[in-house]
Length: 149
Image (cartoon, rainbow, N blue to C red; front, side, top):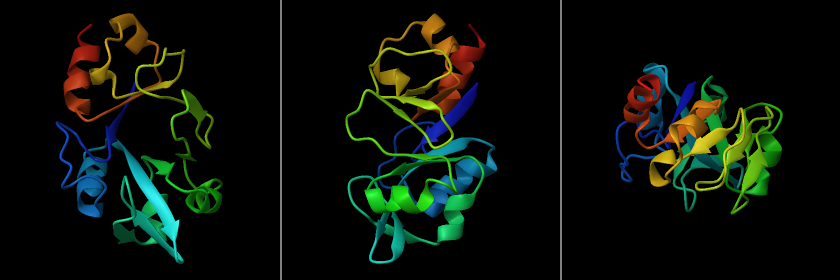
């Protein structure tokens, strides 16, 4: 099972630190994958969920372990062949550029998918076990739960 820190969150949601290079790097150094939100505007990549906030060097985005949520089509177009990225708004399911099924929170899980924010949904332990990965604001807490089932 792969564990993905949602916007860099390992233990809990920290909105003031999410999607910052420093916060993302902490998770990656702990050998935890990270989902990040990326925009491309005016010739620059930015991190940020609801809007572009922190400029980031393009090379930062090529690190192993990143799952890039392209927040606009410009970012998707530039990253689709270079990174594991995806775009969705309110789609129930989307494919990443590496062909992983990214499941919107609360939607039925399928074998080999990425379950997003399962802590907000009452998925069964059996459902979670069939996932390839879990993306959560509390990956370490879920890691303990899943591995003790």
